[in-house]
Image (cartoon, rainbow, N blue to C red; front, top):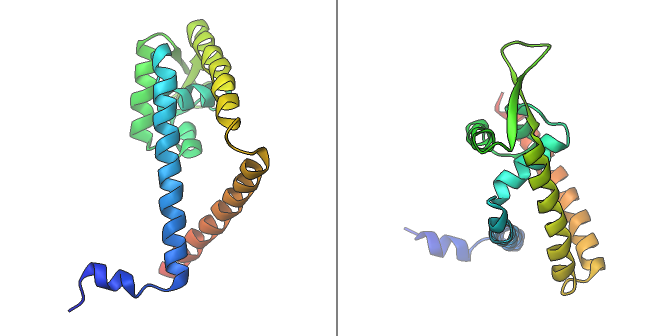
Length: 163
């Protein structure tokens, strides 16, 4: 019987390449989220709260819409939204088209906090880009956008295959 580690030794070069890629992406994501948490702590915010504030400011006003656009669970976004409402950064309003739904909007305090977070982001982005060539960032961004498209298409393929 092969152990799990022994079976990895027999992985194809494609699998090894994709495994390295996924580890790199997950590592970069973890580092970026941790960086955002540390950078935003002085404003009493986390990366997740900042993302929700951004979505609200961009016109995503329902918890479900924010969950879909961020990839967070609906329950997770609901907890973040409730916390933002509780601290006075956002408020719930009635949805004119569907009384079962509530919409989120930034309060004046929330808009001010979001503006400070965005201004602070500009500073740390410049500091980080002093060590990352712009051409590399553009190339990696394009590649990740393409990979995201391919992976999403494969998800659709797998779902169709199941039925």
